[in-house]
Image 1 (cartoon, rainbow, N blue to C red):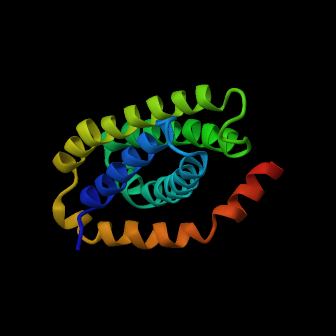
Image 2: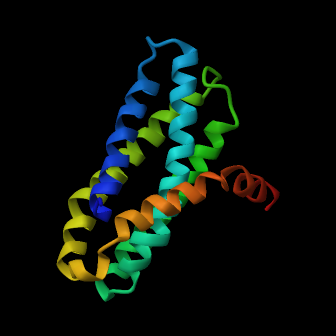
Length: 158
């Protein structure tokens, strides 16, 4: 059974690899596009599951409120870029510039989470309070995967 920290970190490591694949312009367009689609879907499910499990627990602690709000705000900014990129062809004008910004911002976000938020969370959330959250995160992520298209449609209608 993974801890919440291990489950999130595993996703982050996979996301870093996908970002590298997408950024490597020497790769075939189809390979980059496949990596993009996987990254898009996984980050969407990851962020939602993270907010509903890990950040909901953090927000219940005085210190965690600011950290959780900050991270959720970054999720929204990253989500906006994800949607902008998802609506364009991978080789269209401007795609690379927006992707470069997304890559930079996302890597900053996950580094900050791992280096600062995890450390502080371990100090303020007793292990007994968060036991089982790794499995909750993975279960929620699986449920979110079924909702991506529906949520995207709702978002576009707003």
